[in-house]
Length: 297
Image (tube, rainbow, N blue to C red; front, top):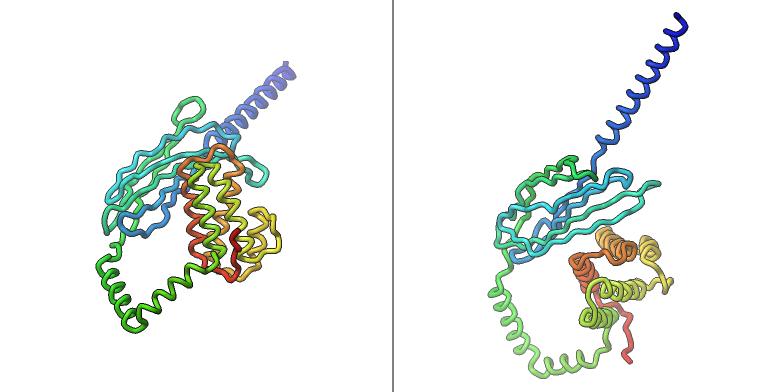
């Protein structure tokens, strides 16, 4: 009889240990929560210009299939121009993660402070039950007064008048004639091709074609030896070049988004396509005309 009691107690203790371990394991799974990152760029703009609010949520693919609702914003001195969302899977160390991104383009109305009131982002689990809620504090954008066009026009008129008085009409005509005969630079030739692509294509097709021209521009502009380089190879080669940190960071961001567009193929929103095209064009426009030129056919 005592032997039976000992066996019974042993079985009960093992059952309790198993239940306790299962409880803690389940609690650990339930307590795992997605990671939220909110940013607005740029945070200083002129009136009538736009800034982009980006909300990114990441979680391990092994977690439940969370569902997030597009947040409703309360805005002051800002207006919503357009919005979009995307979802992608990416590798982090040895695990697969899911990233949900909301993008909202906001336009500044007048000088002062642009305010995005605090908002909440509730999310549901795979069973449709509320799994949690993010709380985002108030965000602000500094809206600056645009340069007065009257002052620019007055300065331009004074400059033109002085030029004609000192240099004469003959000098102006000669300068115009020399500009017409000038061979297109690498920068101008690349921009002309990109503008032509934008007329013929839209969305991801345009991004694919423009990113190819962008890669060729970088290879020729920085005189890289690898003529058929990928985005990663270009970035690696430029690390040894004499570039300022901001320029290298901008290139890293653009080239990373080009690789991302290839990876998620067919899932890039029109909003993200337009912004990627705009950033590539802005980068090329910011470069000085190099000594290298393209001979026109």
